[in-house]
Length: 279
Image (cartoon, rainbow, N blue to C red; front, side, top):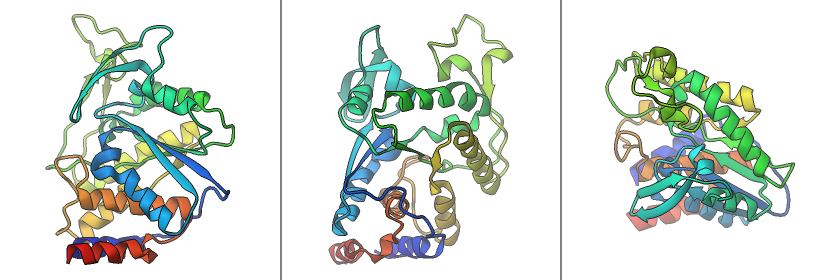
């Protein structure tokens, strides 16, 4: 429980100045992303927090393991086996699971999450992520829908992290044809990161680029995550090199609660019930 209480302190003392982005009788929220969102059922934790104060939010998700934002619009799910997903490129006239979900309701807030690794490639963000966000916006039947980009965290591991160049087709196989040989001009490249602080700065700047390009609201999970790692190194925020642990997912839910309501999650009875269950 010490870990949970420490996270509460972080949420209390690191910038709880967010204000509710919507104030209406009912707010439908849709998460579109992958396992970075759904690990430890974070959206359900957020819904429980909102329910305690009787906020009339309905939180749903369209999240699939390893799926990029573009994949949500271009790939059909063939089979699921645990966290493993089998997909194929959709054909003309077909509608993906996420496209069906978007069309199923009048959404007031859509929260978009891409794998953090993709955001280290600024040209890919400009040429692939940006246009994909626009396509998703075009599918929504509510002109007043607010779009939020889930600013995820740096991965776990040692530094320095060298510059990496990956074939453009990896980011968009429909737009970029991969021949037998891949030249340098057919690749997107990431910057070198020498340490964690530089990594956080570079990742945040990449997300800022998305915000400016697509006029999105941007969450501050990356900075919150960093604050916890530095102030409470005994808290394990990772299940592996990138996925959130239970504590990491709890922190994510706290940040979203603050963003959606303008209230501090630490005021919820939810915390003290959790303490009793873990005593």
